[in-house]
Structures are given as structure tokens and as C-alpha cells.
Length: 399
Image (cartoon, rainbow, N blue to C red; front, side, top):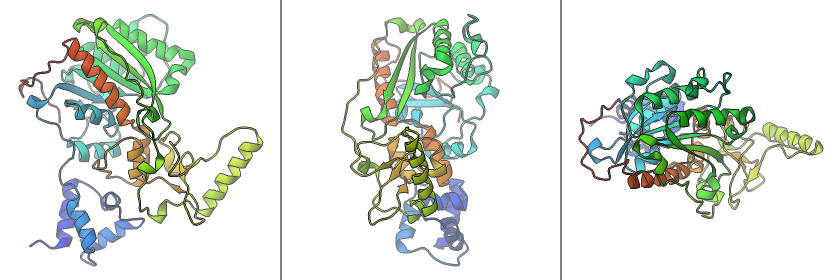
């Protein structure tokens, strides 16, 4: 029988994780990498409970592609991050044939959960090399268009990352797309950025729908607003596609529903940091504005928006603690829950990277609600064949 130190090392190597990453994923605490190193070297042994945790840690990705023959539609995942948009469409029967993400830490989280490493920088990938697909998915950075207004269609967007979406749409002609961005896109560059995006997509012969939706209106305890752009190919009857954005379900939300029962003390902020937060909040108050850190408790209906900068000081979302303790930051698992990720989604990176990744990701229940409306509308328009007789070799799969 294999010794436990050999088992731990082999399992970690199979997952492709460093000792620090595996320790973080196992929730071993502040100095977990040292503990794991001693276990692997045979210098100490984990407890029975810790052995159970290690053995129960998934050996295989929890969200692999289903067989193409069992899929209802195909997607590509651009600016994929950790795969939040993909996960929502996966749940509804999608099969991802291509993904792209340049950040190496996000690639690692993506690989551990979906079983594939995304292709790198999309600007370096020719559109002809992207497989055919039914639905294009992308969350993309907000950038100004220096040549906007020249009436050249998507040529106006050259030099921006939106151009890479547009050139793939132009070449591959997917039946539909879903794009996600920050709410501020509406007013970015005095509204010019969104105007050019819409005009570019319409010039490519797509019927375009735009809406801002809030996560807290879809059962997620976070006041997160994002803009969503949905389009349907006019070659397939896009103009007649009966799509409407989902209506809020107004399900009651409560911050306590996403909080963990036992939280390591490392998430409690220091006296120095807390005093700094208090001082800055008072300074803002004196200036007559409401900026500063924000406190929440279990009974709060929702939090502020989780951002990619949360790792710095956690100021936008701090959780009250009993017994006179300083407030604490959310744990990475709580951040995952705040975005609607299931608990079997693996977090294989450091806390700093996890905060960045979930802050940059999407609210999955909102995406899933949009996806359901898109798929229903596409079935009515016969853009999606609801039968399951696809053949595995119809579309090449890029792993």
C-alpha cells in the first residue's frame, strides 16, 4: 500500500499544482504550504480528518465537456477568465469547442475545473483557426475607439479587444452571441463606445439586444450590475427571434447564506488596517461623501460589488464579527458563492489570485437566466435543433 506522503505528492503532481496552491485548495491555513511540504517529505503526518480531505479532493475536473453527441449546442469561450459564462451554458447542455484566456493563473483554475487549458492571447489567433460554433461567449475589457464615427463598421474597432470578437463573428457567423461588460460601458467615452459596438454588430447582420441586470435581482446577495449584449444572426432569422431579457425573480437574498461556518483567523483584518479604514471613512465623511469601507453581517440583504482589487484591503466588503473582533474579509470560497459558483468548483490558486479571479468573473445565476432565454428563443426560431442526434465528428474540438 502506498505511503501517505507518496500519495499526497503524486496527487498534487497529477493536478499540476504547487505546494502552496494545493495547500490553499485544501484550506490548510496561513502556513499550509509548510505543513504540506512536511507531509510530502514524511516529516509529519496529516490527521485522519486531513487525510479524508485530501482523498476526497477531486482527481478529475468537475465540469468536463459532455460528449458532443449529447450536447444541445456548441459554444466558444473568449476572454474566458475562470469560465463563469461557460459554466452557465454548460449546465444547459452546451459543449465548448474552443476557449481563450491569456492569464496563466486563470488558465490553471480553468484547467482544473474543465479539463482543458485555454488557448492564449486571442489577438494572436487567426479567426479561421477558431472552430465553427453555435454561440459565441465573451466578457471583454472596456476600451475607447480612437477611430469611432468613421462609418466603417467593425473596422472602427481595430486596436481594441472588441475587434477580436468582431473579426471572429464576421468569419465564423455564429447563430448567436452573448457579451458581458461593466455597467459603465453605457456611458464610456460619452456613450460612443457602446454605440460603435452596436453599430458594428448590426453591420455584421445581427439583431442586437442590450440590457443592464443586477445580481441581487436574481437570488445572489451582491449589488452587482453588468451590461449584457445579446445578438442573433439575421441569416438564421435573427430579426424574428423572440428573445427578451429575463425578468428579475426578486428572490430574497441574505449575506449569511454564502458565509462559511468556520473561518481561519487570517481573514480578520489587522488593527493597523482597520484603524486606517476608520480614519479614511471619517475623512470622507468630513468631505461630505460616502466613500470608505463597508460593513455587512449575516442579515444584510446583499453586499457591494466584489471587485478584482478585493485582495488589496477588502474595503468594499467586510464582515462583522462577534466578541469585539475586527471585521474580516470574505474567504475565497465565500467570494465564489457570492458569484453563484457551486461549492464543487475547485479553487487551486492563492487567495490573492482567487480574489482577482472571482472579482473579474460573472454572476452565474444571471448568465444562466439569460442563457435560458436565448436557448428558448433559438429553439422557436429553429436555430437550435432540440434533438440529440449530433455526431461526434461534426465539429472539431480544440482542447
